[in-house]
Image 1 (cartoon, helix red, strand yellow):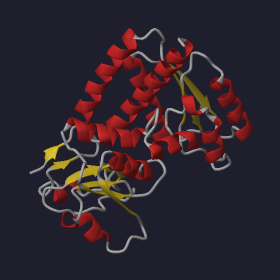
Image 2 (image 1 turned 90 degrees about the horizontal axis):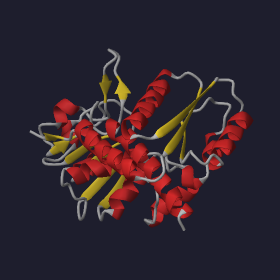
Image 3 (image 1 turned 180 degrees about the vertical axis):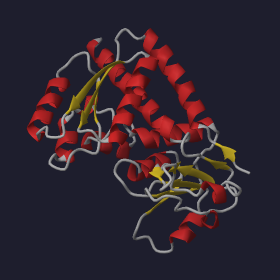
Image 4 (image 1 turned 90 degrees about the vertical axis):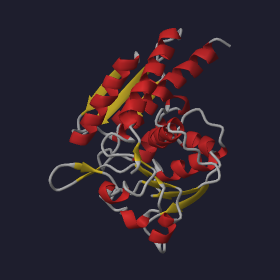
Length: 283
């Protein structure tokens, strides 16, 4: 039976550390969250982010914009926030309405306030290993592995999914941790064989219960990044928990695994952004 990786507990512990850090700072970290439109899932995420800020002592501003907001209006708001001294992090909740170019919006945020770590400058820094911020979900995965004493060094690490938000940066972070990394995707030949080779398997493809017990080897560490809703309304991950849990050594549940860590890592990036700003002012 696998040991359950408890993302809720680790997240709470991390938030207590952040709260103590914020209390000692000579600057109050500030985060601006922008939501365009009324997507229900996005509204929940934004609410949770605001609650997280309050929990650790981060000042937050929320901008709820109507669906018909133009790209020019959104870019003008970002430009204003780029110059706002009490805001250290800017987050634009994705996805955006179809008439707005996500790339243009991401590129408009100055890299030192890009707490999602999506800007090309921050992506490049992650590639070289000399980074200020890490994308929140992959950073959360690495934090969980570290907490449970799971060292990727020398291990076969398989990442399923190649998105810019999770798959690619996750592979890079495992590589920086000296793992031997394989990235799999929809065009991968014999995916099952690749999965069976994994000491650490990270599933991030957005297909409910896609990874089954016959696709993992005995004793593998299974990290499920997926959040999918079944027909009955219940949440499930990309991993079929029931068939994988008996074979795995460690496994993340959905919900309660990687999910809680994502917002905590966003808070961590915001505190780091404020600290970097404070250090710069002190020079």
